[in-house]
Length: 349
Image (cartoon, rainbow, N blue to C red; front, side):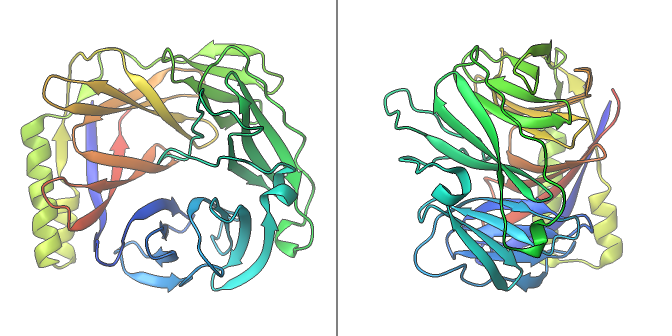
């Protein structure tokens, strides 16, 4: 199996401070949420800004989650956890604001997320609803992910009136209770169900919308490992690109560098995130090693088959999956002055 790692954009971190989230819209542009400067940028494929929100809303904010509402990426829905509100922007214009009470009919005592957007559930602190997250937008309905107690994850649709952006038929009601899971992250897999990752024992299981367990998804073993010398060479090329910003021919030559991979073995992983494009799922999991923590990624088909598995010992967070092409955000520990946006393409194994 082979993997391609391409640099899509390299942006100085003075410009992209404290990146909270990155979304890719259908035309290839990237929407970047920056928590430190309370702003959202629209980047083109070269990493240049082609639009910005500036300071979002009014007053303090802690923007934990965002979802693009349409295929053109013209509208962005943002969950402000600190102010407990949800805001809809049409780029520079604020269209509407709703409180979380209005949106999800609850007032959370604690709103916390992992960097990948999954809810954090604390066994010691269990207010009525420990976490609220925007799961997806389906025409006129926003579906929220709520956790009211360990072992019970609920997805609930909330109809949002009052703006043309949401007009259209309502999505069907969705309630998925997964009592067998202690600490779960639930994501949409297909129109027929969800996939859930249990942080307690590493199970990844598909569920129908009524909560009935289906196929258990497990990455193939052994995983595919990226050779460290090859990976070091790739990051060296990234640093050179960041310093010199070469012309398009040089960039294309560097971006097309191929990393050979081989099989290896690691301890049982800890699953932490799932990304799905509706038919395939990408599972992120961590495995401790003697000298470093390996971040692994397994690309699974809709029936649980492994399409590709690879590992990186550098900090890379994947943010989008589309047509077996993954967009990730990486910070090289040896060059922390730059944010590197990667494109990872895997073969069929």
